[in-house]
Length: 83
Image (cartoon, rainbow, N blue to C red):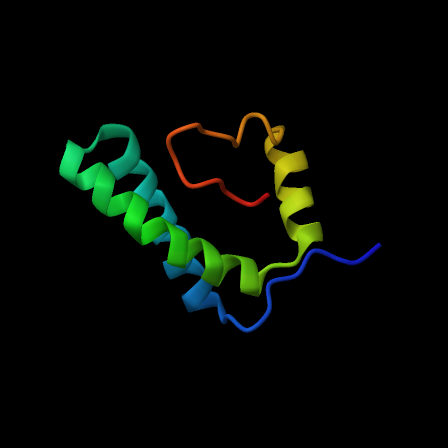
């Protein structure tokens, strides 16, 4: 089994990436129709960047520690996250 890892990002880049996800999540949950559309458009490239930096074991570990399942992370009207 591999260890959970984030590669090719330093601590500052990782923190910025996390903050962007938090802001986009807020826009998706509480934004206007235009803000929600903007957040969806911004989410996909951000997700690609995150998936390049973290290994599958890190995703599995995060799901375990937050006690969430794949079903919890699936949304019918949002770009699928971390599948």
